[in-house]
Length: 155
Image (cartoon, rainbow, N blue to C red; front, side):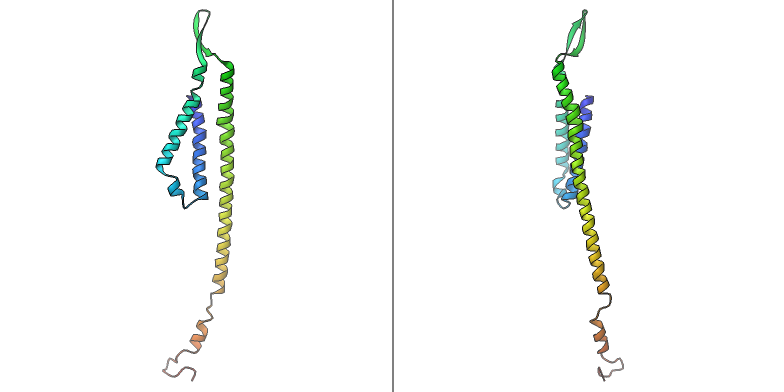
């Protein structure tokens, strides 16, 4: 049971990271892609998968008599060691860590690109605001407008 909890913890962290990746890469589609139903489905699938994988030692453990006393022990050492290697090293450490690193790098890349885009747009807008502070169209209009005293323009 402890092994299934460790395994589940690693994979739920991966699922959350993938969900955040979707939110960063596809921000307009995240509401349709990340739904409560899908989240429940993912958590349930991960839980069941981890329980099945962690239950494998139950098939390799049995009881044998030693000195007339029944003792619980691993019957198939090679199968148990292969399972332990696969679960502990690959499924709990290596694969989730690799996926987390890749997702984090992609998230950082997209956030940096977004920041660069925002900075460029901000500078461009500031440039055009500085260029249009004085409107050259309004100056000739005021110079040729009607005289306030009721006279003709330009007279």
